[in-house]
Amino acid sequence: NVVNIRDLGGKTTSYGGKIKYGKLFRNGEIEDGTEADIQVLRNLGIEAEIDLRGCFDNRCNFSGFGFSEEAGNFYYPEIIYADYSSISSEEGLKKFKKALEFVVEHLRTGKAVDFHCVAGADRTGMFASLLCALLGCSMDDIYKEFELTCFSIHRDRTTRVAKDRFVDFINENHKGDNFNEKVEDYYINYAGVAPALIEEFRSLMIE
Image (cartoon, rainbow, N blue to C red; front, side, top):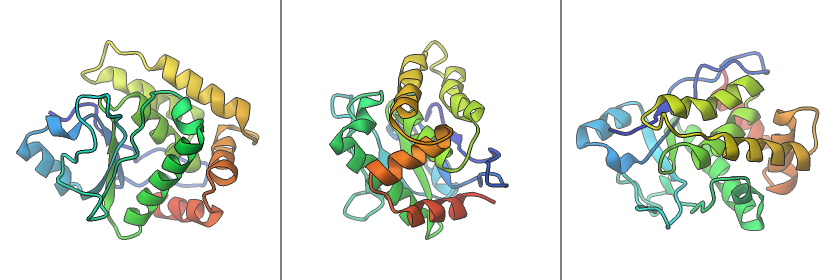
């Protein structure tokens, strides 16, 4: 009953390997799942969660896994808008920096991370695309990460507006020869992420 869920693993990267399976998962709201559903996800090794919902949504700042910020395994950045404006503001830069740091912190100790919004489409799609770009995925695979949502229960939904505006924003406002390099510019020169953290992320995620 947890909709639009998938593993980011299996994609070929420009760094000579593939993204590992069982490390990063994206989906819709966890609370839609039964206890049995959530146990299946836990059995995949998910031990940390990022909730990308805004509090205008029906539910927010609540872990379907029972994780908590106090325990250090839950992060709630409260992402209001499902387009590039969420990543480009001063506050947005801080939130997406912390989200990447949260991911690396848990991957470092062998814990898989789940991230989601409501439908697992736009806000989730943007974060998935940023992560995939840092890992050296092709633009084709980055677009597929958005469009696969249309094969879930949200088959009548289009993510084109959020996707295109987000990609256009990165391409028009950041430096690099391609989208991946421009996302790295976004993280290092705007969000203030240390290059060493990005290298560690790649070492943890690429086989």
